[in-house]
Image (cartoon, rainbow, N blue to C red; front, side, top):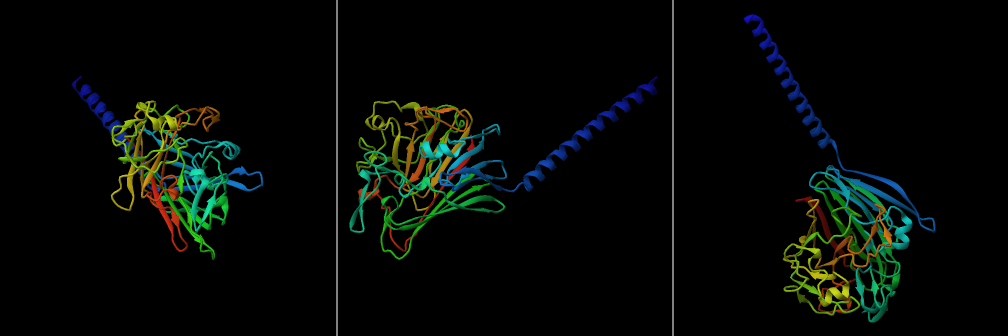
Length: 398
C-alpha cells in the first residue's frame, strides 16, 4: 500500500511539474511573439480614393499608422485630418477629431474641420490691411470680417501629396502654390505642410512657405490646423468636462465682431484664466463680457514663451477616458475655440449630430488681425524670407 501511495504522489508531482513547464513555455512564447510583432511592426502609409470634386479633380485619403497602432487619416482636399484614433487608459482606440465620412459634406458644410487654414488663419478686420504702399481688400466671409483666408482659402484646394517614412515615423508632404492676387492677397506663395506621425503618438506639423517669382511684393501669412478635438471620442457629447491648461497669463480681448481690440490683458481673476488645469465648463456660462461676445471661448491667448523653439502651449485631458493631448509650438499665440457655433445640423463620422461644445479647437498661430495692430508680432513675409513654423500634438494617457 505504501508503495502504491508513493507512486501516486510521484505521478501527481510529475503531472503538476509538466503543467508548470507547459505554462512557462507558453508564456515565454507569447512574450516572444509580442516582442517580435512589436519590433517588426514599422509605421505604414496607404492611399485610397475619397471621391472627386465637381470639376472632376480627384481627392485621396492617406492612412498613417505607427508601430503602437495610432492611426491618422489625411485628405488631400484642404490637408484635412479626417480621423485620428488614439488609445484610452485601457488601450481602447477611438477617433478623437470631428469630421465627415464623405467629401460632399466637407465641400458644402464644413466649419473648417481638421483643415489647413490660410493664407491667413483667423480674422482680419473688414478684410483690409495695408502693405506694399496700398490697401488690400479680402473677401468678407465672416461679416464684417475676413476669416481663414477668404471664400476659397487653403482649406478648399486639393494639395499635391508625397508620402514619406522611416523606421520611427511616417508622414505626408502636402504642397500648394497660391497665385498672386489669390483671395486678394499679394505675391505668389509656395506652401509646404508636412504631417508626421511618430511612434511616440505625436502628430508633428511643419509649415513652410516662401514667395516665388520675380515680384517684389510682400505678403502676410498665418498658417495653422483647425482640428476639433473631443478626447472622449468624436460624437460622444460635449467637452465641458475636459480639463484645459494654457501656458498663457495674457490674452487678446475682442470687440463685438471678434476682432482684437489691440489690448493684451491679464487673465488673472477672469474666466479666461487656464494657467491651472480647469474644467472647460466650469465658467463658460459666466456673465463675463468676453464670453458673452463669443458665446463661449473663441479667443487668442498670448503664450508665456521663454525662447524661440518648441514649448508647451496647452494640455487637454479627458478624465473619463484618461486621454491627454499636449500641444507644443514655436508660435506666439494659441486660439482656443470651444465649438460655440456647432448647432446640431452637422452629422459626423459617427453619424451623430454635433451640437454646441461637442468639440474644441486649439490653433497655434500669430494673433488675429495682426496686420492692423503694430503692437502685435508681425506676420509680414518679404521676398527672400522663409516662413517656417512647427507645432506638435502629442497624445498620451493619465
